[in-house]
Image (cartoon, rainbow, N blue to C red):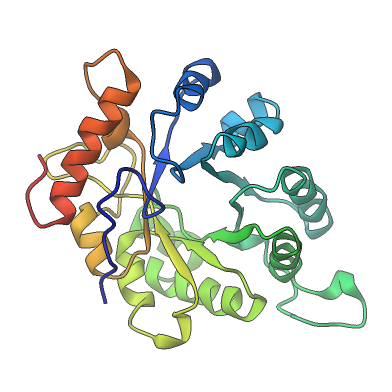
Length: 259
């Protein structure tokens, strides 16, 4: 059930949630200090604060960009917002899974096609991975019951069924739901990206449903989205911090503590 671990520094199996101001991130990108092919996640705040052309800039320097836009709008606006990002061809772009609308994957009137299907098709046209965020890892199980009238696993599986029908390539969910998804082979074509990943003895911060890097991959996650555990530290040089922390994460994946 687990996934192969790549020993090279910062490969596609680990997505770096950089959470840095652009001048600092630009220094890292310009220095070519990270492994070519490193995936850098730019969150919605960053993407709204800075020109979207930064996506192209980073990718022209040999890295992948996961545009974590979390698009959440009515279907027509989802189309228009997605086009603003897809003009720059990010490696991956995401929406909120709850943009789902009609549940139809085909219709005589294109506007009757489900918003997730329309999004997936637009991404495929420019060879961008299409991703949907299911139940946020910061949401408690109690809140899920109040909001969805079911547990997180049940709600995520509802989204995943529709995402599979609509042809999305990727999903964001907590490691705990990854285990449930991987129990059914009909979801094998979906790549699972899991935030809520923490090293042992580190703070969960605002995350609720968490696992260690080793355990998240072991239950079936394809990629780990990691921010604080990669960027934290006392070293002034951000690249030094990331490399040191990556070693800790690598040790944990290999079965060592990593603390």
